[in-house]
Length: 639
Image (cartoon, rainbow, N blue to C red; front, side):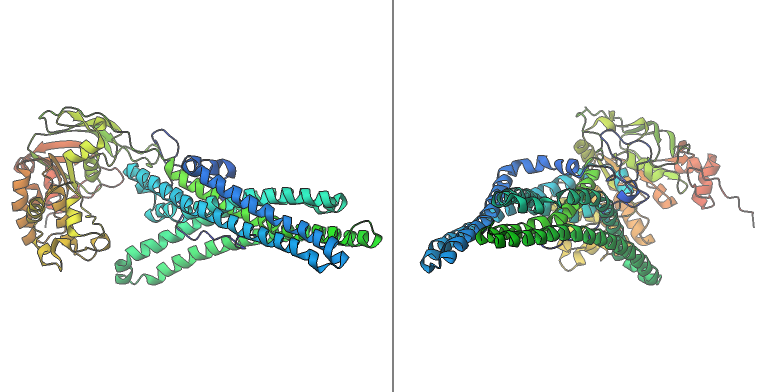
């Protein structure tokens, strides 16, 4: 008979959100702070949830392969039931040829045993063949759907979740679910059926001995019910802690330069060991629960079998039971030993799978960004902000909005510089244009079309963005730059590299086809920023949003980029976040963001003449705005 490993794999993969953060759940738009998933032991999402109900949510992915899954279970049930026929053949051998001392009579039962063995092996082989490929396909579809959903979730969701913890749901949790569907689910059916059929055979052989073996049933049900509740809590806690540990590891790997530069390897090691010890403690509690269950699940049936053996031997001695019947009875009881013993492990793994399903659907249940709208006609009106307000979803209750009614018009073909103190909301305002965040009030118009009603695909075609913190992918320079314009040709690539003064690319080992490494860390900060700028301009977008795109450049390179960038800005409508006068001079006009509103608009020279706040910002004497404050300037005494 095919058997499972003695213990399931521990959930050692990245897991849940940080304890103080979590996903919004439900189906409607998220509002207010997102609830923290926490851990099951602390009333997290898994607390009080039926494992069966959690696992039934996987049915839409299982439905396409249900025939193979049912066929696999049927083959395994047939193989297991064939195994129960071995004791009946043994009974015939003991009560027949053995009792009659007839060696020739053994051949026919022996051939029957051989046929049953071969049939059992073939059926278990069929089970594996039916289920392996189909369950791998289910896992692949689950992972693809999760990835697709992650791409549709708003940036606010990703701000709240650590990437390592999201990664865990696409790797470790889905592996647990595949193992459950391919193995545990099948053997829950197989072993349950085997126990029922086996008990029927035992009762048919001798009802008294059968009742003796059935005696532990009620205590086992009670123990398993209690175990299921406690083990589910510990399982959720362990998987959440494994996710926290994975986050520590991920941050240590990605921030290795900072850790080494500041000599923080000891503090990182302490954080790692602290998380490891928490996970170790939880895993030990799980192991204790499992050992207690195994002690009961194995011990009670063993006691019952011992009692049945004693009673059976007495009956044989009294002549009330044949030796062959006792041998068959004990053989069937031993054949049922594994199905009964495996109940503990199957229940434990089922709880882990239910927890993995809960964690998977925590992400899948998070509402995606608003669905695509309609393809609206575009006028020639530029970029407009009308009464735009914004408040972070996790902002404390009662705190003021970050943006409190922004009104601004960037004319067609105009470059507008956006200036403000640090923390005043400049980056947030620019992120509202491509809908990386959703405005909580007012509206933003691109050539007369409300961005909230435009299809996202169309919006991405119209607007290109370059962030202050450039993000590159583990791909070639060419792939990173052309990400900004699908279908752009070699000429567009070279033109974009020239505009961004990224000629250093041609000196790389393989030119534009050189791999830049994870997050582009093989390049300098200025090189990464120039490639990010090239990515923004490669597609000649209708609207360009630049968030301080020259901050990492030296003075000489900055002047060269500005000269080339002026040619690009002459043909597009642009909003540029600026912190330095050199960047401001790229713009036709300047808008001052202060106190969550646009308080002044004009040319650089006009604002220098009539706006004291602007003069302070340009002279570097203003106090940065923090926590929604307007950044009151620091008055320095005259020398």
